[in-house]
Amino acid sequence: MQRKPQRDIFPTTDRSWIAAQLDQGPSGLSETNHHVMSVYADPLKAYYNGSSFHGLGDADELVAGFFADRLGRPDYLDKWQSSGRKLRHWLIVGFRYFLLEQRAVRQMPLEADLAHASGTDDDSEATIITGAADADAEDPEHAFHREVARSLVRKAIAMTEERCLADDLAVHWRTWVRHVVDGCTYPELSKELGHGEVRLKVMARTVGSRFQLTIRELLAWPGALPDQLNQEIQELISTMAKE
Image 1 (spheres, rainbow, N blue to C red):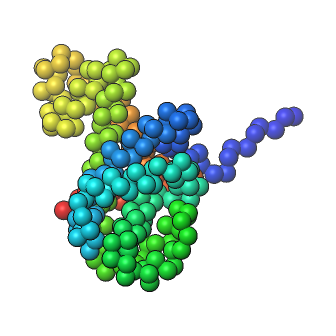
Image 2 (cartoon, helix red, strand yellow; image 1 turned 120 degrees about the horizontal axis):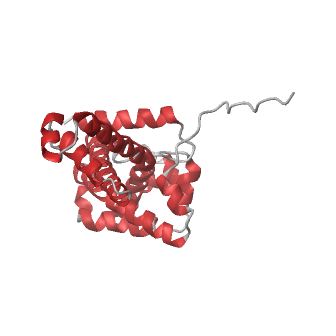
């Protein structure tokens, strides 16, 4: 008698949107770099403006310089994938290290800050979790993570809309937006859209499921387990709630 194959002991990991893009080669890398810059630029500027580094120069120029330097390295995101770390943590540690480098170049008194991070490869950035900026890092880092959450929600909404329209689900999309974003009740939507309330609820749930899936895709990192992603989502929701 043939034995049935055992189910995997470990739960299936969620697929990272970035990993899927990087699998497409140079065009995917370009799309990924654009995504990273569009989602994380404002959060990094929020961190910079609230930190002790803020006197180094213009926030836009420094964030752009960070992206140009790090994303310009062909293996930067490969190293992130190998690290097993969340992207938001990888970027904030890398940005802090970049700011230490910039301050050292301009003022040259920070050899002690950089002594434990000798070398040029980005793996060393994972060690720069403490340092010159840590004394005032709590509030700036909270601002960073809050802006990451907001930016990811905006990105997920835009992606979900694009996917719904591509699948001829425009009414589904409008139903979800009017109910979740605008706060319309289903009786109101029934009059507005000409569909029964039960049908509209199904439409909204369909889009809601797609939105949640998109959020998970954007948040996922290589090796992330479903429970870890659930915790990550809850952490970001909590961060947004703490104004």
